[in-house]
Amino acid sequence: MFKGRHFDRSVILLCVRWYLAYGLSLRNLEEMMADRGGSMDHATVHRWTVHYAPLLLE
Image (tube, rainbow, N blue to C red):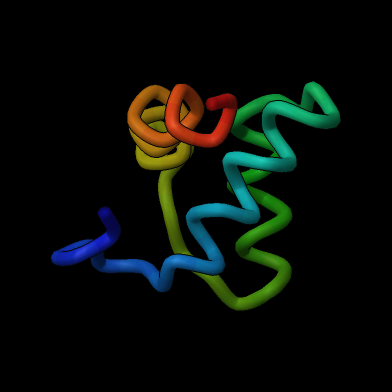
């Protein structure tokens, strides 16, 4: 499911879970990940959410 992704599975799941659970904005998540040393765009987090949210909600 995560094969071929640039970021580690744990980072992807963390972003998607925070977005769904806490109602953070995509730009807030982008800033939070930058504080933790990750460099990603808010559009990347959006694509992850669209792709992985239905799988996590099952």
